[in-house]
Image 1 (cartoon, one colour):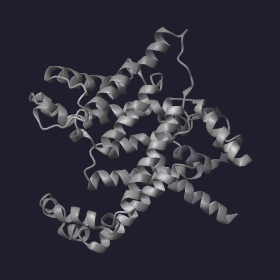
Image 2: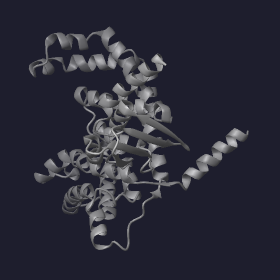
Image 3: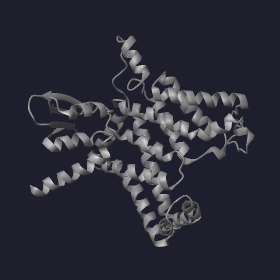
Length: 369
């Protein structure tokens, strides 16, 4: 009973928790191009004077306000401008809010507009709209530091929207995996097999080897692939829930979504899901202290690639590299090659390549001990 009460107290404290918004600022930057990609076909039609009301559409509600062709065109192109400004961090509160508003408004104009990937994008946009994400990597932040040094923006912001969007992301993976698990056609491989057969001729005409398409059309092969896909979604979704498995889940999610983007048409979901991985960055700056010898290039590399501000860097006259990681009230000190690979594995641009090397090295070190 006491354990349950402590857990409830911990969750209650998380509602009022604050943290560093830098990772969400990176999400803001990534979402701008994704919004433009999401609306690309709509822009193409609008350039020819075609809007939603010129085609078949089915409103959700009779009372839902429908913009006329002229007004819709203005709203649509304004969303493109605000999406770019959102990525640049210009008038961030206004541009994030309007971009999220228009994507949501357009989504609910017609039932034919709805898709799960678009709803997922909208959820991410709402998250960056309600969190102050304009301080880091933004024109607004530069302007404030340059012209308003006496009114610095807050270092910490409320994190409850981050907890909510984390729950949503986990729900997406687990719900997707469960729906495939209970569908005998999906679990048995029939869905993927039919997709491969239907696209076989198009793929071969496009340069794909015939033997590869024959393999993809094989029932046993697709049965194994389908089961692997379902289990992978569970590994990612459930892996996000615990700190010890979170890095593994992120590492698996990267090639998983790249493979989906190559082999299936999921519109912007793969890109949005890859961008959403930043929400799992621990929202505390300076949790790691990196000490490097003077002149070591590692310091410059970390400064350039530490987009989330997780390292505090110091230089020493010695010749050893050291990393001190602070987590859950304790500190772990790493030296030498272990420290170097730890640093590389904590940078977003090098994480996917460095993490396996670090894991293998630590496993070998444990076996030797």
